[in-house]
Image (tube, rainbow, N blue to C red; front, side, top):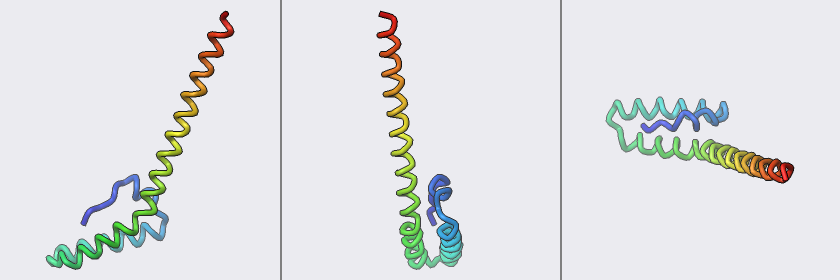
Length: 87
């Protein structure tokens, strides 16, 4: 079974995390029984379950990028204002 990243796991809701852990446990058991056909189905469910958390992570990244862009723009404008004051 493939685990999702720590960042994605951190953005799962409590219910999603409980379901994720249960599915991973079931999948690990199925793999230990060499029932890879069934483990594949469980992995697909895990993949569907984590999609909302992946979207939340992407949104968080976009928000961070936007804040960085605003900061850099403000800093650039601040430097231009300082240069104008010196003239």
